[in-house]
Amino acid sequence: MGAMANARGFAADNRIRVFVSHARADMGFADQLGAFLHNAGFQPLLDRYESGGVGWEERLGRLIEDADALVLVLTTESANADLCVWEVEEAQRLGKRVVLVLPAPLHGAARELAGLNTVYFYSDPSIANSGFYDGQRRLESALRSVERLHAAAVAPQTAPQDSGRDARRAEAQARKEERKLRKAEQRELERQIRRVTAPRFPLLRVLFLGAVAASVVGVIVKPELLTQARASWASVTTAAEAITAEDPPYSPMDVSVQEYAPERPLYAGRNGANVRDYPLTTGELILEAPARTPMRVTGRRMVQGQWWFRVALEDGRVGFVREDVVTFSAPPVAQVIAGVTDIAPTVGVNAGRAGAKVRVAPRRNARVIVRVPAAAQMQATGKIREGEHWWLRVTLADGRTGYVREDVVTAESRSALSL
Image 1 (tube, rainbow, N blue to C red):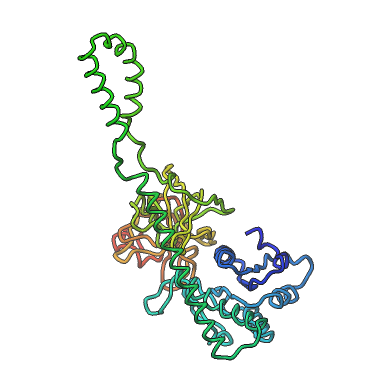
Image 2: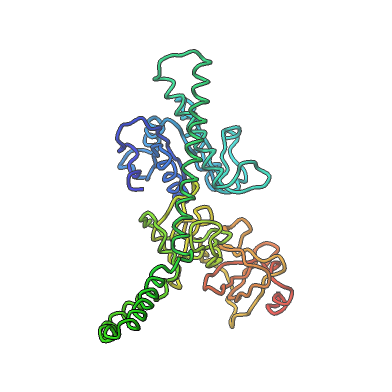
């Protein structure tokens, strides 16, 4: 992402310039979006808040003016900010294409943002074409329309029916080339896997046994050859050990990847992540990593339009995870809240039948650290009254702390705490 640190530092070319506007808290998602746009052939422009004495209105206005399109990353924290509305109005005033990107469900947004082209990067069965993969495709399609408008502006004027026909042909050819590329990637990856895992014909072993048989026949026909056979037996034995040695087992390190080491650590997403032994969903499952499990990235490979990261787990194993089930955003941590009454000694509590959401603060609208399953064990270390409910400060099995409301733990747990 170093090439995107200075929005005005790109070399001039014909690529569409896309300003990715985001809040500070959404920088990790914006970095991934910028990397995707860069790989798709666009020029992503990101604001790194290094104003150098320039006011925010002048800085952002310059970025919007330089860009051909505005992609606004919209979250619950930033949806009602006056700055978002100002950026959209400024982009529309300058005739720029505006696309809203939602990385997570959005509850409430400024009225001025309603009706804009929206791309949903999270999965929702009630929303067609939602999800990380479809979101990428929809975002690219929306920006390609800007690209076609620019191309039409500089191309010689042709009849409307001719230009429409040419555009349809170009789109069909692009889709065809994309399908061919994905199939080629799939075949190459499967070929690599077969090469290291498929049983091999033991040609060297057959040749060795044939040589031994020929030597025996020669000794029987000519006894004087026995002395020579004994002299060469030691070297033959050494060769036999090398030939009959078992092939090394398959390892995820056998898959060729692009060297890649991000600046920030990678974590399993909020729903966890499946780690597999090679970058396909048919790969053998190594680990069902719980939510927010840390992983160290050692490389990556593009397969069927999505990145697969090669990761090193804390226990030393190596595997692959798909980009849409992981995040570079650091997991939230519990806040220090005044007025919490300590529970000493600590009391063991269990999550109820529906599980429990562990939050950063004793409030219903506080960020969720993790959702633990039903009957999950926690240690209650403190309690505080907020409104009509008690909130418990708990410590999870992995050492993380947070707050759960008393009505999401079992009745036995509440009795043990005398709530």
